[in-house]
Amino acid sequence: MSAGPRERVVRPGLLSRLAVERAARARAGLERRSREIGAREGIAIEVDGQVLRNFCSNDYLGLSQHSEVVAALQECAAWRGVGAGASHLVCGHYREHRELEEAIAEWQGYPRALLFSSGYLANLAVVQTLLREGDLCVQDKLNHASLIDAARLAGAELKRYPHALPDGALRQLRSQPAAAALLATDGVFSMDGDIAPLKILAVLARAENATFYVDDAHGAGVLGPDGCGSVAHSGLSVNEVPLQLITLGKALGGAGAVLVGQAALIEAIADSARPYIYTTALPPALAAAARSALAIARREPWRRFKLAGLVARFRRGAQQIGVGLMDSSTPIQPIVIGSNTAALAAARQLEKAGFFVGAIRPPTVPEGRARLRVTLNALHSEADVDALLDALAGVARRLAGE
Ligand SMILES: *Cc1c(COP(=O)(O)O)cnc(C)c1O
Image (cartoon, rainbow, N blue to C red; front, side, top):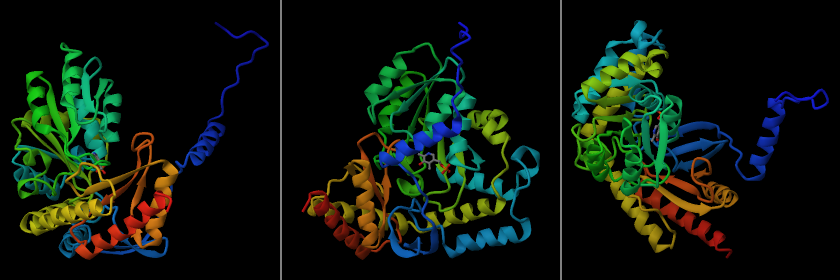
């Protein structure tokens, strides 16, 4: 239907729409602002000029400033320079990249590995290589945003199931028995800290002839034998989980990500995934740094054992002061507050007491489930954890209106 001469259609202006949306976000306590980091040394972090104890980094093993890792980066950059200069398939694939892929594959006990410049891109690559229109992508409702975006971009049908409920996953798979299917889950959920029920999911993926993919951004380096992550922690291997994602920006303290998987899967992704082909390779010095960080993580298991001890201490202490935690055994220990403004106020109160803890709000977490996301680090001392607990007791008192 065409509009009559009198009802002229007015095209909405993008800038005015953005202004309206931004004002609405501010009213809902949803504005976002990066905090500028100054000096940082171990868990001490200078935020907008104030030195705080850092309880919000994903650098779980404390490797991001390790002198050996920094030296590996500097030595490589001294002769390689900084940028890779091109994508892997043009002339950006260096020896350091191959050595890192081989080291990660060997560590994980997987036949092949493929390096990406970020975990976000790796997830886009996996889903767009494996799935196309008409295929089915079954995902946990709390999966990382990059997995959700990946399914949308691939044009596959995205079906989500209630968090950590294998029955829900099975129902979604059975809803389309004739469609080729990928079952994808985070190994450790980034905002809740719990571990996915990988064993059961693996069984039903096999029964339903779906390919099982685990994004272990937060498990790798932290969980399982040799710190291999949530898949090994669950007693699984490449036989049950043919493809998984290890990111380098969290426990390994650097940047980038590596897919490990069966040869046929990795080869298909390297051949055809646009997020692999059409982007500049990770700087080789960062690959050298990641290999150094991996070597330290493996020869110093005390880092993850100490972390596990701090997690246990934090959970015991929180229970003693009546602060409710989620069902998490990992270094991610969120405290659900509820409203956005209350979560922001709680984070501000902690900051005044000398602690840096992130307030996580929708859409990163569901509506009404805003939270403080406490993360523990191998460089924290027991005294750091106890001091945070004292401050959290103050937050709880204020929330209770005392
Ligand atoms: C951080 C994260 C990613 C993205 O990895 P980057 O390397 O930071 O892009 C993907 N998945 C999960 C579960 C994550 O937590």
